[in-house]
Image (cartoon, rainbow, N blue to C red; front, side, top):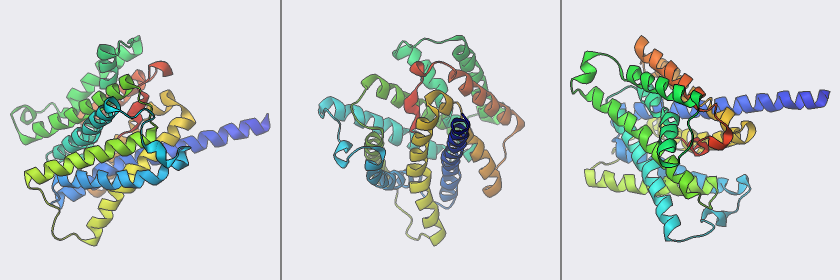
Length: 318
């Protein structure tokens, strides 16, 4: 009994450390991305190269997850699987991250993180509409609180509703969360015969190539001069804050289960707020802080439903 108790404590501690590391890395991506945007990096080309490098860094990890290199292809390859994977890539990477980094040109990293991580709320709502999932009482309360939190997070100030670029950034940030939720619903409905790491590789690769094509059409180019510190920020953004955060999040899911783990998803924007204050000098207004707290409570309520109803694919965040 003593050994069993000690194993439980070790497992619990390991889960918490893994969860904190994953959400810290997720949160850091907003701050590092904001720094590079401030330094003049075009948003679309930056995100495109970020996820191209992240996709390539994901390939060697497939065997370590119990798979094989050939498992990078769907078990039943065909036009339908290819179209579904491409759709997920366009939504999950091209749309989500493209819109998010565009939004961060006009809004703070903290606000962008809070808006993006409303995703579980929209997954619950879209799951009801398209997958006919039942909404229990806690989910309904969570949706109401989450919507109220979004209003507060956007900011109840006159300039937010007067057509300013700040409002545009906030709407783009909210749009990125909706695209993430849509990708999750498509993934759940398609039920692809492909491993999580293989799907991560393909959705990042497809999305990155689409982003780089869009960047070329927009005339965006990588800066001619890139300092050592900027290269360091970019490598952090592409590997630890992308591939690393995904990997640790998957490990946390296995250790703690979907319901328990996803309830802590709002730690990512919390870390963004702390790091933004430390490195960017950004602060939230009291109303935005209250909105973030409501959204965090909403995510916890939404994830109280049984594991069978949980949007487990939302694990593959930014």
